[in-house]
Image 1 (tube, rainbow, N blue to C red):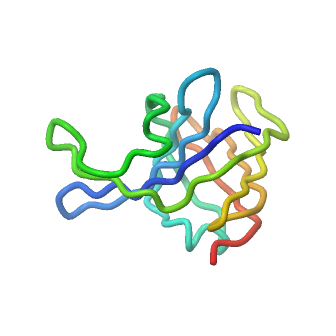
Image 2: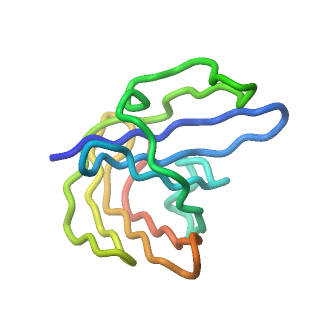
Length: 120
């Protein structure tokens, strides 16, 4: 099993969430305006951004260069069920979130995320 983290990223008055999935020594990162508490409601979109360093699996606090601060919303393990260049299906497991997450490439760096599970 591989590690994942969901971080709440606050910058000035803006808030988004970063889903980071460990793969090959870095964190594949998807940014979304949708908080994990609402992931079960309906499919939502995210943007694939640059990979992050593994230190972000446990980092909370200010970011350099005036980029705001991050706080961990959930962290745990994921099991890859299917991963291709344009599609991910994984099983997430932590004390705060558990279920199946599907990520489908829509266009360019825009992805559709569909979550079936629980976030208490």
